[in-house]
Image (cartoon, rainbow, N blue to C red; front, side, top):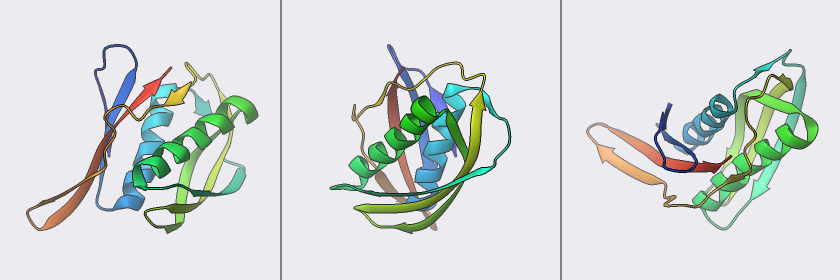
Length: 135
């Protein structure tokens, strides 16, 4: 799940999930919601494999890759299947297509106060983070 939160200069979302896979997928959906627009038809499938030094850097790298594909290729992805995820590597099958009516492009995904927290409250563990975008 995600929700947009107020930020003084840029845009930000709070994201949470039952595990890291859900957190990464919901972060992508949250970023998509910020950019607006829609998909013509989900006809493109792309496998994305990324590596980074830690989970936070991997999350930023993941979202930056999706922002790059939107800006350069005009593609937006709405369905994500996490094939593998560790603290330092991610492999996802993404399905989407050409984006139309995009309101704003993401210039950068920032590290501003970025920390993935594992909250063990009650019977379930929840992973959460806040992501700030430069638009």
